[in-house]
Length: 373
Image 1 (cartoon, rainbow, N blue to C red):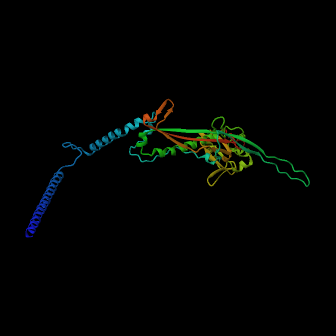
Image 2 (image 1 turned 120 degrees about the vertical axis):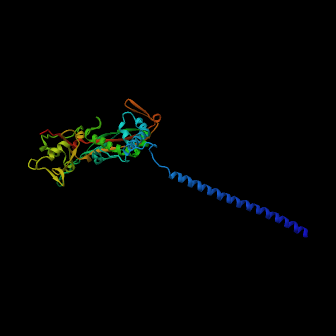
């Protein structure tokens, strides 16, 4: 029994001795690690000390430049960087589109200042009848005359008076524009081109439809100045402009406006109180002719010394679609003698399109060209 206890004690002693050896090795390793970290800290301090002894200068040693020369070198360097970064983008713009290069950032704010005059939206004041049918043409019935109501004596026969109906034809017209950009311009521009383009195109569509209202859009789609049945009273001078209003039916006379070339409008505005006819006056700062509003219209739209009278609500505007936008980076786009291979040339195209019909009812409009004084 004693022999067994002695053997167990010897084993336990040997195990304790091995554990002491392991703990001693761990302690020694920890001391070595601390010594190594101390050495690293000393080396870092030496490096920092050496750094602090160095002069920091962007001018090569032995060639100190004054401030003017240094600024010149920095400006030259920045110009070189700008040419290297954006020069390829400018060169990659579509042919003839050098103004597009101004959209490449050169310290620009991401805002475009629109310096082009925006025309008033005459089209928004027309009578809008959505298309709502299949096909490219449609007929719209119109009431040409109401029944007559007459006094009838006791026991007398009532007269027959039927309404008179007519109709007019509307033909859809497609209006569209394609804008081609390089991907470099779209990516490098300070302005978000994809969001900017609809803001640019929308006023262009307004101008297109405004021009259609006054000048027409081909033989099937005349405007006020070209439609058949438009009344044409004699207007010998600005003092007889009231003849336009007197020529239209009563219901138009009550709601219509004068639309006058800007130069002619200025001539009216320059009349002295003593020289102006009694029906020309101002109400709350707005020019009035016999109580009707007077609106100046750009000469390019209405023509020199032209004037018309009527109610825009008597123009029927029928959109088949609103302005739609389609995008492609794989198609081929032909621009005159230039063909843009979008995928191959790393370009993208935006197609803006609208289909609508516009009808001017001639019998409720009056027009005239006013002779120069």
